[in-house]
Image (cartoon, rainbow, N blue to C red; front, top):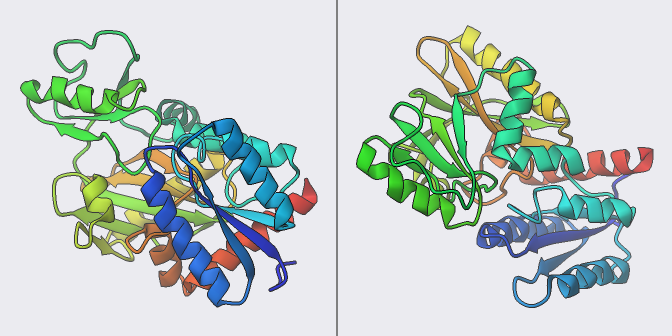
Length: 316
């Protein structure tokens, strides 16, 4: 189904706070596809100006390129939350990644957690602080806690709060993105990343950040975190983590590639934190690393994604 004549549009940029990460992901994808001889073109969804014009420009680019498939490299709101997926569904253009519902659930950390818990997947306790409502003077659950925006990726606005006087500044940082704020119990343990590709679990990665948490700097700065692949967990816990990652992927109804973040305690207990339905493709991103450990090159990974998306589009 996928051939060098397949006309691919790599959509990146956008107006979310994750724009620069998206451009890095999209640039890496486009560079690989064009070097391999594919009929690939990039489209930077502009951040400035009318969003209506930006969407019209995207549809015009799809038509002009006679696009067979869109390779989505948009991160965050309006790119990873089901909105662009719905637009492409209406336009009857196949695209990589999850559909509207799974994308919306994945970016919304609260709804994703509710779905996972309903599927009997263990997740840390959390409390939601609604936007526009004055936050409590003290953390609503016992310290330490993680404070984060409700629906944003790349660990933007995320803080670890270990002392009471750190809570208000952390809420202010998370609130700066104009969203509800999630306060989540912090679980000490190993940060495990479970990447799934078309329903196949890939080798697990343990992330060991230079600081205490896997924040934006740790994710995207060279040397910000050590990646251990495969994750050095005991065999029984490793297999349980793979099972949990795949269960979270299925519970949300994901398709294509997704990354599930887990915490593995030394006691053997596992917790699911969140699901990323448009994993990054930057030089420090985890999905390409997990794929490489499974024997796939970066191009192999992209071809698997594109082939699966075309197959799903043909069946729709």
